Image 1 (cartoon, helix red, strand yellow):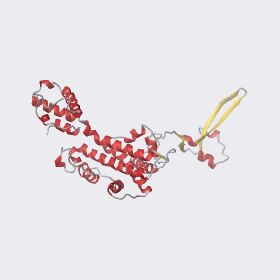
Image 2 (cartoon, one colour):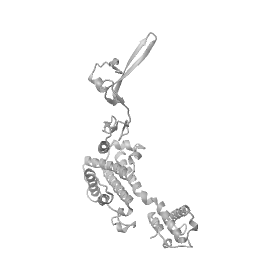
Image 3 (cartoon, one colour):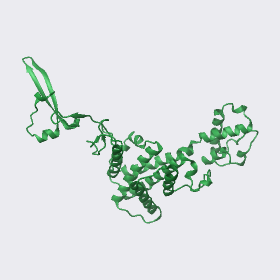
Image 4 (tube, one colour):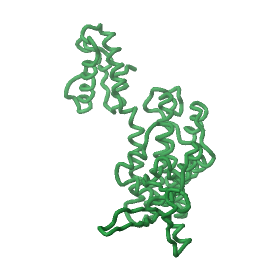
Length: 341
């Protein structure tokens, strides 16, 4: 099968028999205006011809090979379909969870289906990047576009054997549990506790953001932070709980100095960056002039000692005391004489 025909299949364009032979001396020639699909492929062929250096000077066979290579390189629909579809399903899942103040059972059901679909697509995308044949259930059928693709379970096993990518027990349990629930939704009577459904969704969403960044170099978090969707996600307690633990584990592994974020409450505030790694809250840390501990700027009180002469104030000394020190000493009176010692 020629690369030109494969490009047509990838775009779901009906194939005419004369596409695979020369017509009027032109390799890959096609009739004009026979269908919108043909026009699309004709444009793609024309663009590819123009991008091949000295195309007209090549022989027929060389033209066909060069044209086929360009069409294959320019056919990004296959390359990016898995990722774009995954992003679409992820957006749908978030919409089901954040579109109203009260999440209904039907919303949870649809969200579970969507997040599982995202996982399935991202696993396939990683396999595709290793080699497109590994996306297929039977790799011997590559490059058939009609062959069955792998399911989640086989994709995970194949990533381990071929890509040396393994998931921890918690991640595996989460994915398999979600699959079981999804299968029940699709084929059997569906019944699950709301609390469990939210917990599964939260862990799956965290898995999605972690996997896409680590193994696909796709920062979905950054894309979600570009609008209000990230803050809406963090309002889902089950997601915040699962993802904050994941981020905290990464910070621990990297030996990053951190503390409790005053905004979201996660132990993910990176001290050196003055920024929370999950909610992006930014705040400076200040040394308490009484106890010497570093605390957030919002957790200190300022005390001023002003000197006056006959003409008015001539100097002012300001010290900053943390709320803990103030609370421990209800009648606290700062000792300005100690400042600078």
